[in-house]
Length: 101
Image 1 (tube, one colour):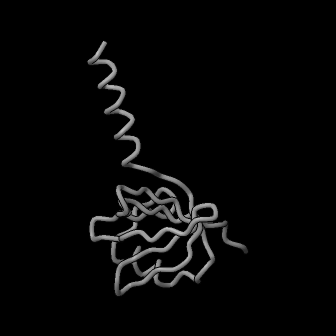
Image 2 (spheres, rainbow, N blue to C red):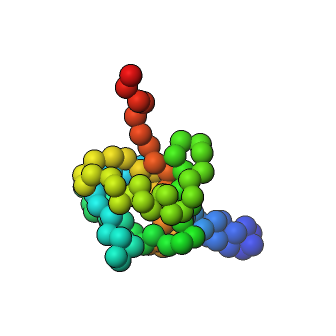
């Protein structure tokens, strides 16, 4: 019974470390490599590293192109799906609307 309880506790801790969710883009500071997002009413500052992966839809985007896209985004506009591990972003999925003809 103790092993089962410890296994559940370890599982709960591992879920707390890796969080994914859709957030609103606020701004990106290229000098500090910090991404500011708004999750509900709270603003969070997250670190973007060279190991951060980027996706646009289901397609992978090279790291340099992804960072360039963050720099071009307008402040306060846009949605992102981010996967965070401790205050460091591991994956950013850019969510966009359909192109208008």
